Structures are given as structure tokens and as C-alpha cells.
Length: 238
Image 1 (spheres, rainbow, N blue to C red):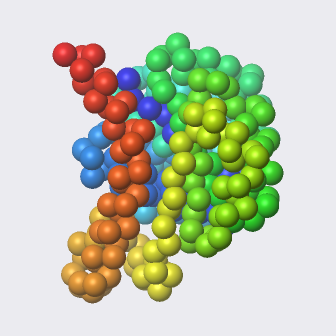
Image 2 (cartoon, rainbow, N blue to C red):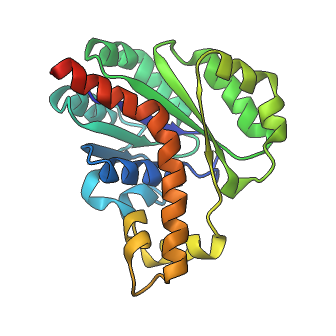
């Protein structure tokens, strides 16, 4: 069975949609089937860059969010990515509690990952603490230090809550900073990360290589905990 990924952080501007786009490109480049959901009705960044793979959701409506469960049941070999807009926790928690969402995923034998994207501020740590208090044990936490939104994560890494999360089995990802001018060019050009690494007309040779190096570094970190799941599935099927 393929995995379910909720990419959040609750705080605005920490790079949730960027992380979701990167994860989408990872699945594409690893030849893994995926489908995406975008809960940000204001910007819709994820759906704008990966329109062919993504549907929009209204977090205030249960029947809209139920599409995640429907797809989890009907497409067992498709990974699902849910890009969570800021300030959606209250509505999402109500849907998850009333619908026993994590219980459904457990019955479907779908591994669930919750990505907590952070900047280097104290708010991200406070939100991490709240998340740890309510996250079910069978959900795998991924803590993402987004260096594009903060360059000094020393206080984060030395904090009690961060160390507690690691001790409980959380995965740690460091999303390196891509040159701001290059990231701006990618965004304003409406390019996927694959296009940014291969588009000779808009992106220079040096810039394409920087994107490729950035992707390779991120993918290597994802491989540590996502590829073993895929390889284990393949072995079991044989």
C-alpha cells in the first residue's frame, strides 16, 4: 500500500507548499504514482505548479475532505499528498476526529506521514509541541527545517521538544536554501522543479545545476525513510 502525506506547519510562510511541490517532484522522479490535494483557496500554489496531479479541497466542508479517504480506498497504489494551508488545523482536526480518519487509514493499511515544516522561530517549536501532544502513535512525524525561511536552527535542535520528537522516532529533514533569485525566477516562470532543472531557454546552465544539486540533496534525505517502504512493499508482493 502507498503512503499518505499531510504537509503542514500551521504557521504561514514557512514553506509548506514548497515542501509539497518538492515531494511531488520526488514521486515523479522516482516513478511513483501520486495524487495531490490543495487546501489553500487563497493562493493554490501546489495546484498551480502541479495542476495535472492536484485537486482543490475546502477544509470547512467534510464532503470535500472526504475525497482524501475515497481516493485512499480506491487507489491503494497511489501516494497521496495533502498541502495544508495555514490556520486549517481547527477544521481539519474536527473532520479527523469525527470521521476517525487515522483509524480508516490503519484499516486500509496506508502508512501516514505528517510533515511539520518549520522556520527558525520559536512559534514553529510551540506548534511542534502541540502537534506531538495530539499526533497518533501510528503516524510518522517528519520535521522539516526550511533553511530558506531561517538559517540558524541551533535553538530548534537543542530544544527539549525537538529532541523528544527524535527520541520518539520522528524523521528530520533539512531543506537547504536555494538561491533566492533563482527560486523567484522558477516561481515567476511557473516552472516545476523538473522544468527548472532542464529548461535551457529560461534557466542558465549554472542555475540548472544548482536546482539539480538541491533536488539530489533533498531526495537523498527522503530516500532514507520513504524508499524502504517502497522496497518492502515490492518484496512482500513477490
